[in-house]
Amino acid sequence: MRGVKKLVVALAGLCSACAFVDAPVDATAIPACGNLPTEARDTIGLVEHGGPYPYPDNDDARFGNYEGVLPEEELGYYREYTVDTPGVSHRGARRIVTGGEGDPEVWYYTDDHYESFCEVTDV
Image (cartoon, rainbow, N blue to C red; front, side):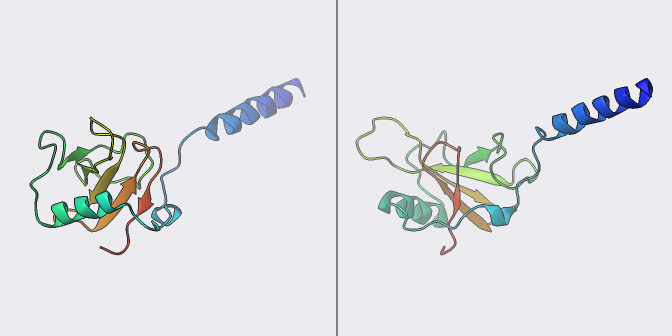
């Protein structure tokens, strides 16, 4: 009986530990964007035309999705672009992130430096 009790306690601990393992993000879990700021639309236009970008060392760079907020894809699938933030003298927190093997297939916007995203569906 004592062995069964230990086994139950061990399994309960294992199950509770599993609750902390991040599951892959479902693309349908990312909400569609409402109205984007004008600056985000301007950045989308730059991406569609291949630049020039205001931060050439940072824009059109690989986005690693290390936060795991976007759906899991192979490294190199996502690219990021700075969205200008009026009144800020640095890059700020706003970004457009695209995903795709060549031309962007999906577009995302974040205004909180990758903590959350919405999907831009009207590009």
